[in-house]
Amino acid sequence: MIISPADWKGVPAPTATLLEGRFIRLERLDPARHGEQLFAALEGPGADPKLWDYLPYGPFPERSVFDAWLNNHAAASDPYFFAVIDRANNQVQGILSLMSIVPAQGRIEIGHVTFGAPMQRSPKSTEAVYLLAKHSFDLGYRRLEWKCNNGNARSKYAAERLGFSFEGVFRQHMVVKGQNRDTAWYSIVDSEWPAIGAGFERWLSDENQTPDGQLKGLVECRSCDLLIFNPRPYGCAPRSFSSRNNGTLHSTTSSSDYLHRARYELMYGLKFCTSLRTGFDATQSLPRVNAERLHRFPVCPQRLPLGCFPLAPFAQQLSFPHHYLRLFNAVGFIAILE
Image (cartoon, rainbow, N blue to C red; front, side):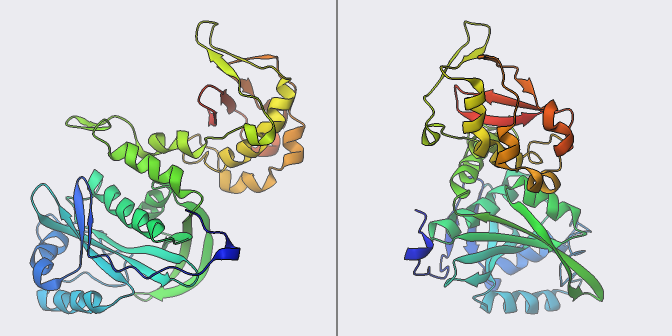
């Protein structure tokens, strides 16, 4: 449940020692139980050679130095570290943490993401982030952050894939390993989490994760929920979709009114164009979108074809000349497609 700022009382700090998932489980980091397998996953044969490139520590060629680093992390409450255990073989394959924990303001971050090669590009890495995100919002946190070196393309791609929204770059934020670090900031807020969380669950489900691989990508599983809108708050009567009638949408009011009612959903939808891989840089164009421009949409026919209509009249203003707005009233969402 989302708590309004007027009723905000703060939230508890995380204290969980076990979070169970389908592919992995997260256990509170314990060097005595996790250290040996963790060292093998992060520094042993087959370890990712680029794993430590953007982290403020590592690599650890000597076990004693690694153990000292691990013991230091395990003793802290912020960052609050978890070991990632593969449920199929009970092997420890990575660590990550909740950090920058501010219970009074409801702000928390996922960081120190250090996954061994067996976890990378697998459902295990995605589920690890999902479990921490879900736990954070279940505790009542208002804002979940993800920060990374702006030069770390892998982490930036992961943040967007996982549903975080890009917020900007803190230039000359810190010095790490003798080099300047500009930090890219991303976040998910509590009002966004129900849709993002549902996308995670759909992607992780048995129906999607089959023995032959995944059927749909995470962005695809999330996109319908992210762009869901309910026209009724804007005074819009529901419309019907008929597959028997050449796939058309039937409107009982003018399609100009329809677009007016959809203007907020369109603005919300544009924010996620990048996640839908349309090639449109929403972070640059979204600030130039406003309700007044959307009100000036051309009036479309009463019967809107499911194939949709072009946004040509203001495509030049938004700098995405080959994209179309697609209205699926039957399921109630708007998507931007090429």
